[in-house]
Amino acid sequence: MTTTIEAFADYRVVGDLGGGGHAHYYQALTPQRLRSPAGSAPLVHAEHVVLKVYSTPCGAEAFERAVHELRAYAAAGSRYLARVHDAVLLSQFLYAMEYFPLGSLAGPSRPDRRHAVQALADAARGAHDLHEHGIVHGDITPARILLTDNGGRLSGVGLTRVLSSSTAVLGTGPAGQLDYVDPSTLVGQRHSRATDIWALGACLNRVLSGESLFGDLQQLSALQAIRTIQSTTPVISARLSAAERDVVGEALAPVDDRVPTAAELADRIEGLL
Image (cartoon, rainbow, N blue to C red; front, side):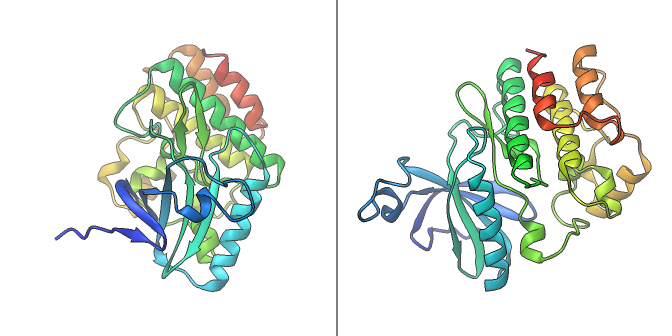
């Protein structure tokens, strides 16, 4: 039997947006305290927000780490990042962020190529703005690239490691999400500017071709997917044009040859328009 969730704290849920291994997303009404806080201008003008509700229980110490990370994300002040409005600790950690009616690049309604390419370029600029503020995203996937009318926004940072106080990503989350994880991080390499750039290249390959770099990981367990990635050279889709393949290749290259910043990658992606 499916349980219908009606509310989290003062957020009334109006829609289930799905989720993965780490968290679930809900569309919710913006609570009155954010619409008209006493003595100040409204923090949130929109009627709806998106709640990201993490799956594992969260204590006060982990909550403080996550809030610190979200504050740093918000301080980047980038127009290419989805806004974060609020964080709440119940038995689980959740935060409220900007709602995008058009969904993400992982949604069932695929935007046209020009829109998708611009959204990817905007996400790369959002990642660069985070990097310039000393923040690594660590969880860039098509689902994290939200669509605006004429581009996109990069959403949320990868808080799973922060909440667990661990750098491990092994064995968690759907196997298909590992398609966007730089293989070096699966053997202990720390997430970095370079690994975010790799993830953006993997997103570009997937969004423009519909294909994975490592075959169909969806049918595998997380452990099988990790073994496949570690023993397989990523293959850029033959469906891409030569110019598109070149840009993906620059993002996936060995670190010393990889495009050095996400801003430069954004320029290369926009060159595909």
